Length: 78
Image (tube, rainbow, N blue to C red; front, side):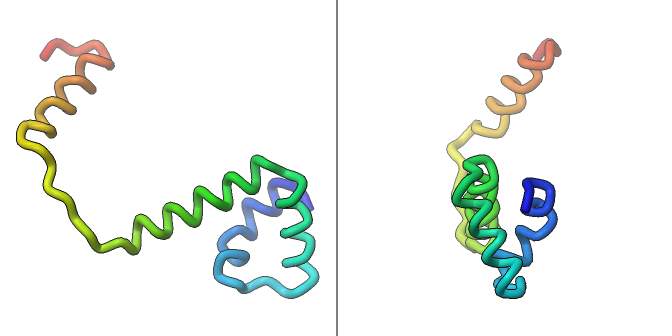
């Protein structure tokens, strides 16, 4: 298995929707490839964040400060 196959099958792996042989190949690749293992961790973290229903109140003025900083970063005058 290579990195492209991992990218293609990662959702099936997370959903436990791979056959035993493909799953074993996938896991063997993850043991050897730090990049793909990090990708898997990232995907799992994204799923956790997406299903988390909590909301947080932003500090007063946060949006305005963030917008100003982003505009500054791209070279626009505020």
